[in-house]
Every structure is written in structure tokens, then in C-alpha cells.
Amino acid sequence: MAFDRLEAMRAFCRIVELGSFTRAADALGLAKTTVSGQLQALESQLGIKLLHRTTRRVSPTTDGSAYYERARAVLDDLDELEAQVSQSRSLARGRVRVEMPSPVSRFLLIPALPDFVARYPQIRLDLGSSERVVDLVQEGVDCAIRGGQVHDPDLVCRPIGRMRFSLCAAPAYLAASAPLTHPQELPAHRYLAFVYPASGRQKTNVLRRGAEQFVIEQEPTMRFNSGEAYLAAAEAGLGFAVLPMAASRQALAEGRLVQPLPDWQADGMPLSLVYPHSRHLSARVRAFTDWACALMAEDPLWRPEA
Image (tube, rainbow, N blue to C red; front, side, top):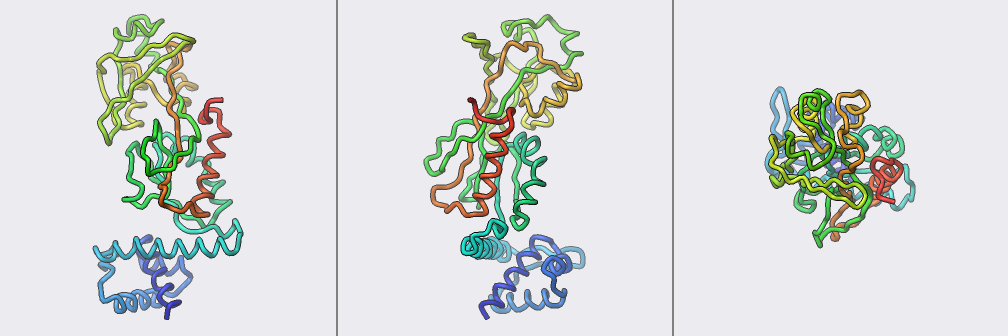
């Protein structure tokens, strides 16, 4: 009975994840009637309705959503136990939920994910990509890559890299504007600023040349809370911006953007891997974090300061 219940839990979780009895059955290598029977038996045993069914879609009920989160955790823990007992990397399996800033996912992690999938084919990733600071415990996130200083005492914090920035502008904008040869001339120009979407706080930018320092404190002409929109605004010639180098690299190489003050370097942002003190770092999570840290350390655009 216990084994049957586990199989029914697996079937239910696959139905929720794939949104279809047919796709769940295909993924599990079972007949659709078998999966349907497992779900009915599970609902009967629990005495609750787990799924809403229509001719077009299948979705969890409120009880079903709550049951899914707990059942998924139980199944992932069982998968983890098997992997630990076998001591085989190939059996590292289960779901890993991770959050990270958009530039890290878009320009570093996602292009390299085929390598991770080849190494760990049985690990399923739920990858959140935004500038939002999530509550790892409340939202069930296993780990996160965070930019800036981390002061939360409930989190283990491991410095792993750095996001580098550069001051950029479109050639057409510079051609139609006042000369720009020193940061002190920036107030005569249109400033595009980035605002963190969760807090509404505007990012502070500092430029350095040797021992010299210049803090950009002028009122922005426009503010953006999307990295893609921020880059597009700079390319459109709306003003100067301090962009992640990973995001601006291609535009700089193709001449859509230039660096008007190449001798001045914008301050970078430290990147850290964080996870809750209270949570055991499972083999599947460690597999992902070790891979991501190594990937960042090997890339001169992202590696920590020497």
C-alpha cells in the first residue's frame, strides 16, 4: 500500500507539472487509464478533490496545490536518499528551485545549461529570473544568487562572483549632445537610471579612475525597472546608462553602444550564493551550486576580484 501511494503521489505531481493526464502518463511510461486510476485512488484515500478537470485543462484545487508542495518535497527527499545511498553522481535527482538576477541567468547560466543537463539529467530546475529578493523559506526556494551585500543572519552566504558594469551611450546620442570627456560633464547629459522593482530603490553608480572617484547623483531623465528595457533605452539614444557588461557586450561589439569614458570604471556588484541555515544542502542542490560557482569562476566577466 505504501508503495502504491508513492506511485500515486508521483503520478499526481506529474499531472500538476505537465497540466495533462496524457502527458503525465507518457512521462511516466504508463497508460493514461493507470494514471487516472492512481489519481482517483489517491483522492479517495485522502477524502479531498485534488484536481479541477475540464475538457481543455487540468489544474490543482486549493487543497491540491497545498498537497502538491508537500508531496513534491517528500518525493524529492526520497530521490535524494537514493542518491546518497548509491553515492552515484548520475543518480543525483529531484527538483532544485533557484532564484537569480536576470543578467546572471540570461547571459551566464542559461547558455551553459546544456552542460548541466548532460551531467545531471535527472535534476529538474525551477529557475526564477528577476531582480526581486525572494524569501527562500516562505517560497520554498532551495538557493539563490544575490547581488549586493547580504545581511540576513538566517542565510548562509558564499561569495562567488561579481557583476561588472560600464557607462554606455548610443553614438547618435553622443553626436547630438554636449562633449563628454570627464564625469563632471555628466550633469549636462540625460541620465537613465535603473530602479530595483521590489524596493523601488534606485541603483547608485560610482565611477573610478585610479584614486579618483565620481558618484553619479544627478536626477535621472528616465528610470527603468526592467534590465531589457534599460538596455533598449540606451540603444535608442535616450541618454547614458550604467549597464551590466554582460548585457551591453554585444551592443558594444556591434557599435550600437560605445563607452564615452573608457578610462573610468563603474563599480561592480558582488554576487553571492545564499541558502537557509535551517535547510540541509542536498546532493542535488550541491550539484547545481558547485556547477554554477565553477562556471562563474571560469568567466572573466563574472569571476570575483583577484
